[in-house]
Length: 558
Image (cartoon, rainbow, N blue to C red; front, side, top):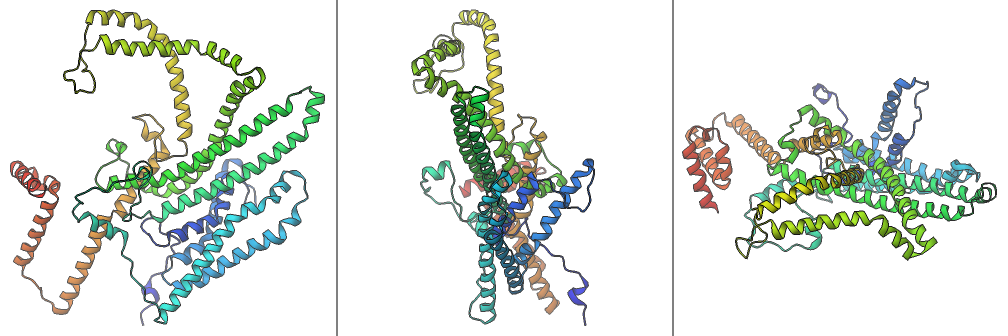
């Protein structure tokens, strides 16, 4: 009797982030069920150990906390990934139903008994049901999903339901590549041209779907906690109005507090909208970059920066955690920056207009910005004079612009000499504007790790962007549809030949026939893909013949 499992032990795989495309939304909602624990790992510093470590070893506390969350939630993912759907469905249903019942019990009978109507902690507990909404939704979805898996597996076992094999997305993608392009291009809408175009032959991997969903859930929790804390703080500040009015003689305390309150909520809404756009852009940029890699068009950074396999694989491991952390911290930092900018706008625009009127404010603004407007006018006149007097006329009336050819050279040299000193002053103002623009753009792009915020030439020092590139490269090497289909066909052909040779112990075809068939397939592939001719090893030896073959193939396939 052979040993169990052929002498090998079984390794439990909770989720395959690399190549699986099944149960993507189930995995995403399973991660959504633990979103609160993810936020706790970021903002909380509780010690899960029975003893206290010194501050220099606090990183081990975070590592143990992360392992604790992973072990507690591992059964959900294991039950989803197991090929034994009946066993996984039953165990997953029991586990998710236990957590769902526990959340409902705690929300219904335990939340009200701990609220004493005093202090920030009790104020948070009073709004705890808002934190548990997404938990209940996720666990409810998982309960239904595991129930569906159980029913489906039972029907298959009873022969009342045929299991239909789904054609994989990689096969559909390659099948479309082998088809001739349509003669007429389909007209696209504005949304498809500028925002997003759905591709039925492309599927986002489980890692991207889970990361995006978890980012939304973590953002919801962070915004909710922030708004509850800010609401409590503002209500406490309103209760102190009499103290500030009588003791400190602040007669406009209520007005200034209103400015702060409205600015805080408006900036929060703007930061939330910005974060939602950034999270949604992850899907757009991932599909764009991975398709560029599939088509052989490398991203700009990859032409000068080639990460090692270790760094690329590390990017795959780090991406999801980086994206979630950057989303949460990016929202907080962008919110604070928008809040400060909103206060500056309120106290420089709204408050003076309410106090002195619009016309006095406009007069002061004109005096303050007069020098700036003069500089803009000078720069505009400079461009106009350059166009009118120092550029030669168009070569043809149909040209869009004048050629870059000087006219009136002596006058140009004199103007260039006198503007040399003035442009030094203007350069100082441009330096300040460049600093402000760079800070604003860098702050807005902080959550978007798919874009480098470092200047050109220093992108490799942006660790988060290198993480994104490493993840894209690893995905390209392990989930390229053409490579996956080729490996499947090669494996299927190998297994078929092994089976045939095992039964007959003799070849089904003569060597000459096999060689002719292989050459025919090679010729057909090169004719359909002329660029491959230049990449062959014989191309360097027979350069002229290769160029002739390439030209012939292009002329006969165009």
